[in-house]
Image: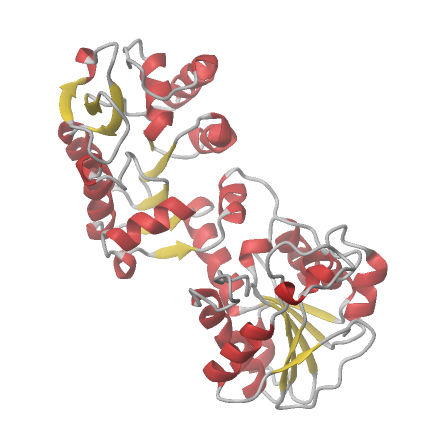
Length: 396
């Protein structure tokens, strides 16, 4: 993917004395008193800001926070706590600017935070009028917010159309490089783990990947639906019987290419879904009518771990069992450790996946961890991300 990068503009000396507008993702969780409870996204946004400051730019940063009503600012919508945290991280005062669309006073070597962009009328609808006003504020627009790249909004898409120069910040560039490496130029074999409770929410991803990957590993409720497609009984497990034909079609599509969707050979069952439920390992053909499948079994986990070990590229989205309960976490833990130990390049994304990575303490052993959520999934689906597409167009 060819797009302009902030790092290239800095190397060419094109930021000195320029006004730089950075769209960051500073949408962090807060408690009822408005205190930030987890600041990963703020810390991740610092490199782009610092690089622009050190290059002699006058820097403006904005982000959304929560779900404010356009045109109706409330104190709970304010980026004030983020301005305070950014000031600490950057070691300089970051002033918060209200009502900034018609003009911002900022000098080279200074950074200001522009109040919650989703309060501006026209932001969500990607209003050209709003985008043009924002574009007039800057010489260079920087998108460093992959998490919002799947939405066409005025600060993610519109402004990039009209700004004199539009580029990707280090976070967005790293994300696109990693995703491109995993899906467009993968080292083979390419293994994908797609797990979760429902096939319906990930059906398009499964169909897109079925065309590309060598091993499509399914887990969770998705695996149960594929077990039904393979003629196995799943008791009272979570599944979508109406999508069995789709699962069969995906299995057939993979087989035609000499690739596979491994069906579990053993599973971990319980009679109820609870933290205290008793786990029982059973062969896949021995599931009783009152059983719930809550994890893949140890034989299946070992077979899949072997496939992962041999993969050149691994894409991971979703835990393969109810890993929050330790007795149903063996499958997810085995695959997580296999990914961590694999020689191949790995990329992981999605909220539950990040939770599993944290639980098994393997973050430093994953090739790239995507914080994108919805954007990560849409990229896997093969969809064009509007905020990325406009950067590609501007680079042509």
